[in-house]
Amino acid sequence: MFDITFVGHYTKDTIVYPTRTTVVNGGAYYYGAHVAARMGKRVAVVTRLAREDWGALDDLERLGVTMRARETPASTHLRLTYPTDNMDQRTIEMTRSAGPFTLDQLEGIESRVFAIVASSARGEVSQEVVEALAGRGAMIALDVQGFIRVVSDGTLGFDDWPGKERILRHVNVLKTDAVEAELLTGESDRYKAARRLAEFGPREVLLTHGGGVLVCHDGVIDQAPLVPRELRGRSGRGDTCTSAYLCRRLSAPPEDAVVWAAAVTSLKLETEGPFRRDLSEVEALYQHLLPRRQRVD
Image (cartoon, rainbow, N blue to C red):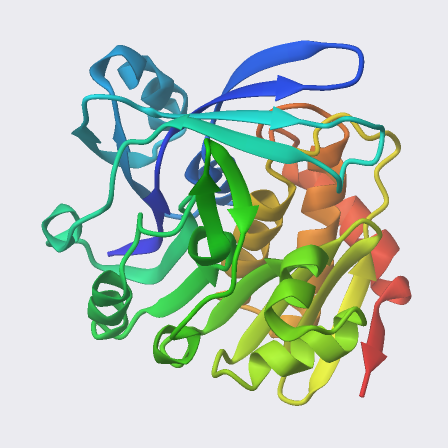
């Protein structure tokens, strides 16, 4: 029995900033599993990638993560371009894909949480897969990006999510950012957007934005700010936040988990790549942020 299992593609990411370009191993599972492993959780990853990129799994295996990988003709390749210093503005191109997940790849895995936070575009994880995992009695966490992102001429863009109610009624925690939430609801006010998304069925809606993170649950909204000392690692922000929230959520209520997630994410934003900080730093920042938590009825 694992505490948390991440489902999603390995991605080879070319990240283009205004002044430099870098190539890194990516994929939401990569960022998320680093957090969960460092929090002492029993972690599994179900992923797909080409044999030439198999070495990218070693980093997590050294942290004790169980990897269930399927070899594919090509790994998923993404090019993320940040044209300005505003890290919420970016374009993403997909030049290759490792293809969709199938139920047999998830056979025999028991987990308290299945985090489907790692799909890059619509079609990688089907409604059938979500329903089957929900039928195992686990907590289901889902990132909307994998269901509203579509590939058009090689570029990832946003589209509506037809039939979302059929999937979201199985979801415990729905992750979104402010841009995605507005697209799905038509609400530019993030509080209204989160409440509107909750009406589709998920018990908790976790929403990130440039200034912080909020969670809508039980008719209220709790939020905490992001306070990085510098901004060097925007890629993986949402995946890090989701993992931190879910891992804390296994033993704490939403209003506590959102503060912990803000602390972990703030520290991650200070450095490119996955979260590698000591938990003592997280605890100190968490205590600092607790008085700044706000509730919106």
